[in-house]
Length: 179
Length: 375
Image 1 (spheres, helix red, strand yellow):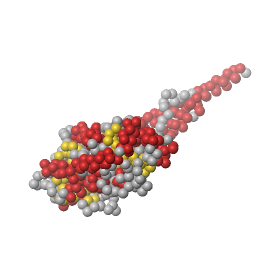
Image 2 (tube, one colour; image 1 turned 180 degrees about the vertical axis):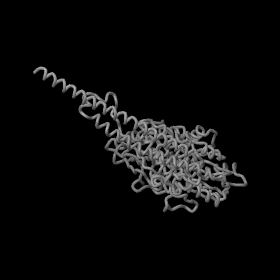
Image 3 (tube, rainbow over the protein chains, first blue to last red; image 1 turned 30 degrees about the vertical axis):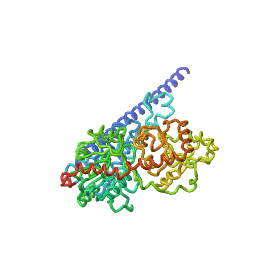
């Protein structure tokens, strides 16, 4: 009788251990996915800023447009964690104001350098939209996993902080959206 | 002289730069010059005949707030056409640091270009990223004017070099005559004009002094014109005096002039920072008896107390003492008023415009302003 009990208890312990380690492994994989998504979002934002700065310095724009764009890109590049969402949203708004001007795309496309920059901008803007969506998905799943009773009780997340969504206005300019 | 003036901000939206340009343009025209202005403006804005619209300005984040600016190829094209048709001797741009029509005009023009700098920035992150494109455009400016020491300092820090200082003018004639506001035409009124919630304007000092005075002067009233929170203002004064305070809030240009004519003593209790007291020169034009804080800028404008009485800055007791002395002495008030009207003449736009004209004459060349083919 006692051997049966030991066997049952042992089986339960093993099952629990397997379950816990499976949950922990899953959380770990989610954290890795989240980390990768964060890096790709960061890369997309940095790249968008870089294209904006290059466009601003390219001499294909008039100086006022250059200055508006350079100022917004500079704000985005130098913003701390706290202000970053705000600064990136401002850059999106500035880009819309700049690119949505009448005949802007035609004017830029007339110049080979301008055409190239416009294509690059198109890609960079789209990638910000995608990578932010993927990042926020990863945040959502990770948050649910971290909030589970087991994860909280056994501190499966370790020192990983509770992830926050990245909320910005990243609507692309009209001509890019259509193009 | 044929003069082309470029305004970076919406003509039909009130603002200091717009008022400056309007007054300067009109003073120059009164002096017999031909003046054209180009500015962004709403589609249905009623513009004076000398103003050409460059189209609507676009709201865009700039330097920490949302500004309405006019940029882009289309605007540049309109400035170019205006420049070609105007055949100006001198081009006068305002705020060329702002990415709007002023910067565009510098870009498309070549020849004598005068620039006036209005704003002062603690820092301009926008300008710290200025690309060679912008620097090369700004290098085309032949003469620089700053409207204040602060604006001049900003300029020196950002692009180096210096500027001549020509302060804002005041159109004295616009203020000299007006009827008092209804209900404010009988005796013993102290007046204040400015933002109620900006501590540097010093309203709390005046409110404290008024609380001291009101007990002794049963007919004394306080007239406050300017935007801000009324509750906060009244909270600083005992409740029994509340019905003796009139808060007008934001006032129209016309009511502002009438407010100057409704007071026996006009008080400017600023705690500092005011590099040029535009409110003070307006009150002087209206011939108000002025009581101002003893900050250097005010002391200078008021001729060391000849054109207006002074009190110790930030000191409510001193303000109350001086105000009581003025209220007691109509003869002294009349003397200050007369001296103020005389002293303000050197700040009149006709005088200031003559200084600006000297700058134009210094840089003008026979070829005048041409289109820059490289832009």
